[in-house]
Length: 477
Image (cartoon, rainbow, N blue to C red):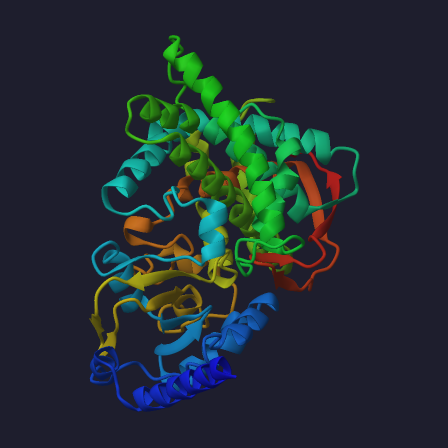
């Protein structure tokens, strides 16, 4: 009985203390109250507006259902709470430039826990300062002019082999599924030089992708748990490849110019660890194949719905093809001639960005346009904030590739990000899109089965039916 009385009194005192202390602002609360925070609604306790955000994301309605209503109500800068974190959403070219160019100074990358766990804590996505610069330097050296020159014929061979094995003698294929497998193969074979049969890993990588934005609950049966298990399978395979490559290079084998060789060479020199090699291979496979396959798929959708643009694009590729001998691979110089095709691809990515934006975390109090973003808060820049703004792109919802014939305002077109964290693999993505478009349009007649096919997100955008297309062989006149 005495013990019960003691417990009861303790609980009562605790409740009185909490009630009293909640009325007394802490130093942190006093400091925050003196700051002019952006307007906005923080939503429910802890969860904030996460449910609304995820609901809009799954329906591929982030701009229409989540961002635009709040921008109309609060302006281009507004506060919210997402996934447990107070977050300031910023929009506009000036905001993009300010936050992207101040990476490592005012903000640092801050992806959700599930993304970090699955992509790797030692990947370039999470690295800061000198570690980031070291890894980025290794990656970009592979995508220099000389690296791209050597990569083009390898990519041509991979694409032609894929079309021969998966398109020939078919009258209908899933464009999205086919390009996902192809871009996955290209990143393994042409970027890394990894000789693993792509089909053996493709499904495993897909299981990891399903969990990158899921709640980080590592309980059997959850998306995150399945993704973690798949990630472990991938890691075992990659560690074996890395150690075989290291043994060969330490035995006298020279670098072959591929990214895996460059990473292993840095590993041998003691500049990076084996974990960093693994995590960056995993990250780059995802970054280079999933978003690129979506961009390719949507490019064909835009062309199908805009026949005048397709006629101009086809003319460009027929001219390139006429100057090649039968069976001769494209060169980097050929790719540079695909100017209108790249305008089409950029306009497609403007209207259908492969990513909606990116999270950062304030590492100090930030003053921006009269507001304070407190240290520790998240910052989310969005592609939609400029891509759909008529100030940067007149008549923004119309498909007009020729708008990219003229210079675009800096930091207005940001499908690859910007600043120190500009996507390291964007040149590979560009090459992949242009070369694949060339071989498809010069070898096949094609049409969409479902011209108005809906686009969903889970967690990245994808065509709900896989974008099936009808195909038939064509020959260059």
